[in-house]
Image (cartoon, rainbow, N blue to C red; front, side, top):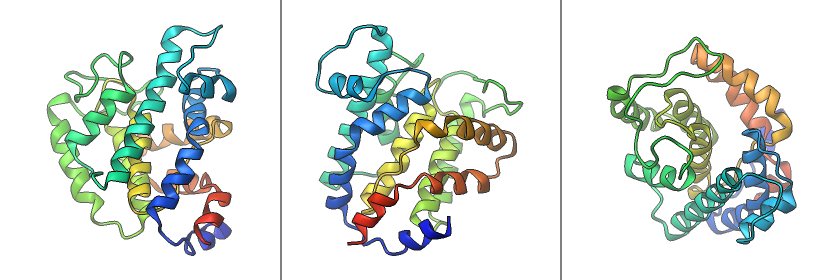
Length: 232
């Protein structure tokens, strides 16, 4: 962890370079995302789907989830490249409209009813409090000086508040990476090989609201190869 922290401090923020690296990794980003959801595509299958070709042996609904993730990443790249990325309710909903299309009960808008989190005693806020919770998130963001602390905080708060009926963690990770890319930092990918540890830590986070463990875990997922390139 100390080594990664030392490397991060040497990053020379560069939005164009960060976007270039993220675009080259988009297949991996989508692949890990769907594996974390229990959808067992191979990386070549994901790349084939992202090229617009269906693959056999998988439910169409699973293929749609992978395609949605690819489309959401492409949308995020375009918005960051244009300089129009902003953390706002409208943008978060627009991103969810792509990432959650035909998967969530409603997509592109905050949920209109209650939800639970399987395995956790924590109950997310009622629907009528979600806009207030989002406003509180906007206020809390400005208190972070470290870009990784800010980005990870956004992911965790979005996951815990469950602003949408579904696709909350995926949308939260997209917004986390939007913050990083806009600031000129490389994407932070959660590898599916860490799925068990991720799920266990998220359960503890849901119950406690304490971000410390998850912050350390997410930082451990930073790819040192990308950091090395960004330090050049």
